[in-house]
Length: 244
Image (cartoon, rainbow, N blue to C red; front, side, top):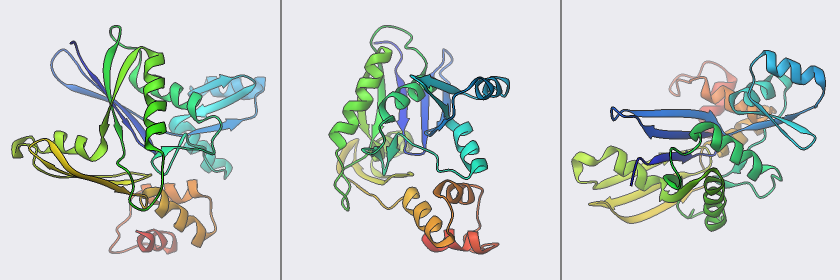
């Protein structure tokens, strides 16, 4: 069958995984974000000099990954994302082509034709109505265009396989992401119950941004810098603790 690659499709981050010849797992992480900027010779020259990852689609220029997140904070703008609340964003017109570019950046080209790539998908949320079928099909389509055969795997179930090998893959797998909070109860590799809630990292960011009167991208940066939830240092950190 040959080597298999893995892709964790998160709302906030994309992670590609593959095993080298010595059996060591290599990971490549990229923030699942982009930002459109004005396309002119000066801007493109600046991006090249700073070695910023970007893409040109038609007449638009998009900064990708961590660079987009950093630039959005500098410019006090809201970063754009292919996914929202754990699935492909229905209101983001450029979601699919940008997603394909980001996937290629973390996975690279396949090592051989029709290489298998298992990718994570959320469970059906209990508190929202999202189209998981469409979300799964978009990911499979992007992988197929790159030359992979995509195989979906429940996110919580993947945690069980990763962490509970010494327990006969019996236990509870929890994945706390940006879009959803996924839970899977497994018995000897078999998922007995899988579900998700939509109140996850994005929900926290939106509430923090609302009470502080700031952009959600800024709220994300505050949360991710590291906070002692038992002893918040200032009003911003206190807002994050309350939302959590």
